[in-house]
Image (cartoon, rainbow, N blue to C red; front, side):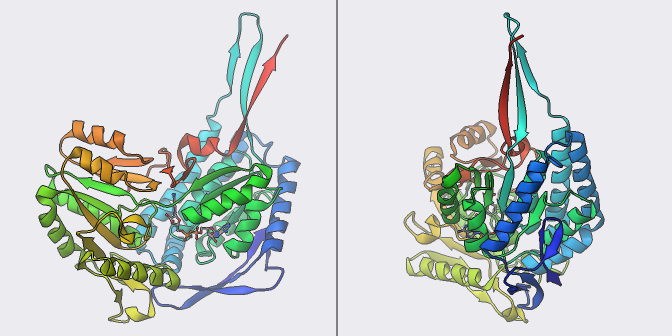
Length: 480
Ligand code: NAD
């Protein structure tokens, strides 16, 4: 497969002609080559997006007209769902069950959700006693740079593309250079449904070049970034030049709290899903498990038993439960931090190594890993690992659980498991996190604003707030 950039309605290679290989992380095989662009290519895409925005061919369409395009994109995605799910698994490594039942359907639903939302959006108006009126309208911001990561390549791109387009903006999307395949398929659909040239542009290449250009350019009005907290800081600095609007969806180190009155097996199931879904490469992963001391030993023992039975391998098989790490460098980073946990004296309960048997050596597999008896100063407890590595801490009572749960620079997600609903609600309200669950984990809904407190981000994706972040608000005061 040859993947090119889509700029101003045309498929183009990088101006330099540079290309890069795209790998299947389960086999190490090259599955595609992609254009490898740089600042100059990003500049061309920004120019096209600016021209398209200023022409009004998109921004001044009615909400119904824009919504119709989004419905058509959703329809074509649905027709191609099986093919795109297969490609997403081949490029990212995640298991086919996840791409088939989560990544692609949620992407389709997201286009429809924002199409419905923009159609239903009403102006606010107020009339005063002196018969002056105020009307409040929403307008698109302009050119939006959308920078997204590799862990949910299509879905996280759509979480930004759908509201940005619905609101009437023009966009330049930069996917991760590691996982361009599924968004390339989406842009084929965008071409097919006939969005006006320059409304949606795809630029490929490294973050330090293409992404940074989007963040710095004075011609980009807003950047929506999903990725690591350190990169988010660099985007904020780069975006300051023209006071760009920014939204940042960043990392996490999210706690899952288990009280001793809980339905034991349900809590174990959720703790497993919380950390090992997508091989732990989920921003909201429940990577810190806090278990009440009365059931701690039994819980750790049961988790270890379950984790060592997870079927790990090439995600394309229907029965596979966990796939590889998406890139070799990231696998090596995870192995290093596991090593640090061992050196710092944490108790390795299971996993802790690369898996190489039965042909897995060609890919980038890590065994589901659990550490117990950890302390708050260890790197494995403090840092986002973004892999299948769980640390289990002990707590005594409610106050202790809350204090430990909030003892992090992050504030993305968190959960409480208990049969006592009053306690659950008390504890969840004291968690400093944006996405929370009581007796469940990882369930994401298009209506639910997604984002974090503290260093986990600024603003929210999804929900009506996800659309508002792509709009300016104007008051019109009328005196007759
Ligand atoms: P990353 O920050 O390395 O890269 C994300 C994107 O930014 C990529 O497209 C990359 O090319 C680009 N980029 C890199 N350096 C850049 C720069 N200097 N300027 C502009 N763009 C740049 O993150 P990643 O490794 O791709 O993804 C993992 C991280 O993403 C984790 O920290 C995870 O928690 C976070 N994440 C957050 C959410 C959320 O919704 N909060 C969702 C998924 C992932």
